[in-house]
Length: 131
Image (cartoon, rainbow, N blue to C red; front, side, top):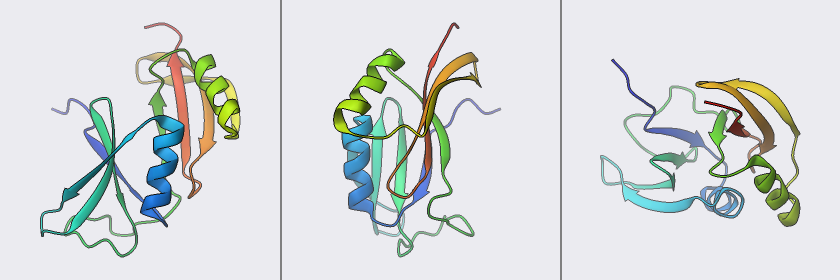
């Protein structure tokens, strides 16, 4: 009955700082949109997905009961070889918390690195070993 994830929401300390980090590190594109009650909203677009960003002050009728900064933990699939992404991180001075390490993704074995965004959300970036 469910096909895929469309978007997730991260509660962050500073929407602009977070947006800049994901633009630089992940190559995401920022999006500004108007929420259901006319309020300003912010998102990060990549592929066919997006991450909506909110801070503690964001007003929206559909919000997690206890939005928590730094509680995000998600895996992204690299668009190219993971080693290229690792080299890129090294070139821009972004630390890898762990990896590369073997893990299991939704479609099978993956090879992953873990890093932290400005709010210490755990961001896993992986490549499939075979599909």
